[in-house]
Amino acid sequence: MHKTPLLSIHALCATIVWAQAPAAAPAPSRPSTQDRLSVHWEELSAADFRDAIGRAHGTCLLPFGILEKHGAHLPLGNDLLNVRYVALNAAQQEYAIVFPEYYFGQIFEAKHQPGTVAYGARLQLELLQETTDEMARNGCKKIIIVNGHGGNNSLLPYFAQLQLETPHDYVVYVLGIMRGAQGEPKHKSDPATDMHAGESETSMSMIARPDLVHLDRAPQESGADQARLKLPEGLYTGIWWYARFPNHYAGVGAAATRELGEFEAKTWINGIVQAIRAVKADQESLRLQNEFYERSKHPLETPQ
Image 1: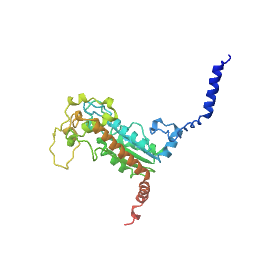
Image 2 (image 1 turned 90 degrees about the horizontal axis):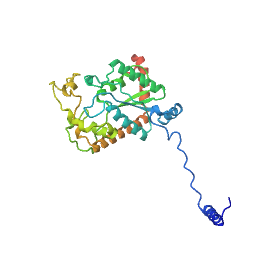
Image 3 (image 1 turned 120 degrees about the horizontal axis):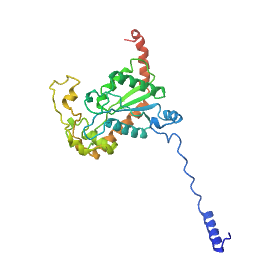
Image 4 (image 1 turned 180 degrees about the horizontal axis):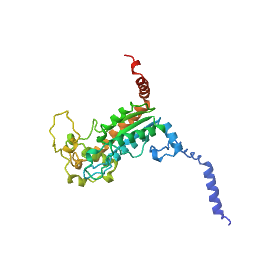
């Protein structure tokens, strides 16, 4: 096909303009493999996992939840969903590898409610030990168990203490639930009974998984303290929770707000970020742990 003179002139002008235009900026370079590493253990390839361990300085998170009733308005896995939300967000700010969903904890007090999965005490400890051992075998020499369930508040410190029973080449750290800080929005309900599926936890869930929050169902059950035990302070019995909150609901979920939830989430995420940084910088725990293991072999030689 022959070009008309007009087309030829247009082509010539375009060529001149193109030649006089400044050179185009170079295409942006692709991010490095490390920049693209997922924080999800299960999403990494084997080769990427090796790189991720290096980037994380051997620091890994084990977000720990449970399967239990959360009033009439929240999902059974609420603790797990919330703790993974904050752990994953924290790990993206200060890189760490986040272990997959883990809900094999202590929840005997909710066995009377539908959907509760309560593993035996021996299995809880054995499975957790096997899990941290396997994490360490894969390079996680600093493991932060991020607790998302109040029923684990005694289990996890005890597990950390058990690490002194036999030598380990890694350190277990336990980070508790972090809620409330200076500047927190004013609560609409009584903070003294805001303990389970109440205003604070429901507000947090409105940020982590708003699609699973059903505020309209919250008034269907009472989260009031029924105070059915009269024991002196300092005297403990395992039935205390059931005696106070048989509906497995403590607080007023209907009072929840996104404002409080955003504050709770930010507070918790920041706390985990600070914990990751502190653990990465910690050079003493493993050294002291190894020193303890050696001295425990010969206690009579320990200087007195």
